[in-house]
Amino acid sequence: MPFSGKATYTAGSTLPEIAEDVSDLVSLASPYETALLDALGDPARPARSTVHEWLEDSLLPNSSTINDSTYTNVLTDTTFVITHVDRFRVGDLIRIEGATEVMLVTIVDTGSSTLTVTRGYGASAASSLSNGAKVIILANAALEGADAAAARFTAQSRRINYTQIFSSTVEVSGSELAVKQLGVADELNYQKQQRTRELLRDLENSVINGRAPASSPEGSASVRRTMRGILSFVTTNVFVPSVSDFPEETALTEIQLNLALREVWQGSAGQVDTIVCGGREKRMINNFLASSRRYTPQSDTFRDNVSVYESDFGVCRIVMSRWMPSGVVLLLDSSRIEVMPLSGRTFAYKPLARTGDRESGQVVGEYTLELRNENAHGVITGLLG
Image: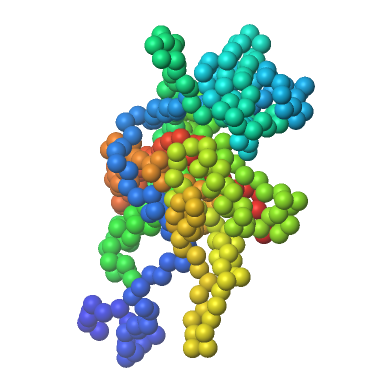
């Protein structure tokens, strides 16, 4: 039989060439969405070093607490021990949180950490003083013609994170490149795309949950350099609801969420605009609407979704990320967060030297997280549902 060039089933030359009925489409089932990275958007600038630093500052604090165990609802005493006496000056007008009485500071004794005050300033009604009460400075009233007071200032502080290298190897044989593939026009490009998706998924996971090494975090030949994630940065505003406070068995409630947003608002100039949670916690947020949900007889659509939560403390979009730990909700000011590449190190494919009948290379990127003013963010944890 002359050579025809066709490939036929070897059982007989009279049978037609066999064709498979396979859809020319590769369906991807694994989750690869990066909801948080998409919400944050591209950074304004790249990192310039593997050790990435930024500066933060704060205003002089205007409150402290009474630290005097002899005080128990005292209405008349004019001296008391204060925790941070250096925050006060003669001429300060102060009041106790939750009370209307205004007091004038007349003596600041730094040696004994004691304030001497004039009670009931401006004919304000006397209030009880108690140990642990918060003392708020209204303002300082300077005397006309007085000399300038000693300068006071805060020192800028450096914050630090580290870049992390994300890499994945791609390798396709010469035969795979030559044959016609089902659903894939170019196997090498397809593998690049798949590995990049995996690395983006890992980047979002690291942005949320990443940790730096306890020692030599800058990395070495034997220590892998890893970046800190959001959860490792936020330490000031950590809220852990208790069963006694919330009998709903620590399922996330609107009361808890508003309390956390209020605490962040009180303690910083941050504007929480993003709530990041997992699927179970998203269902808890959706349940906020349960008591007020109404339907008409003509309604044939059941809506049970909260995508934006608007409160007195800001308008927050809800971002559902698969990589959030169970029982944890993040409250973020997205204007203070950037996920940035090291300059020239965004995800890219780099071919490797050929050592045989195959094409190989690496998809490589190096990124870090810059989270400014950690007290402008919050985290609710310990939710059981």
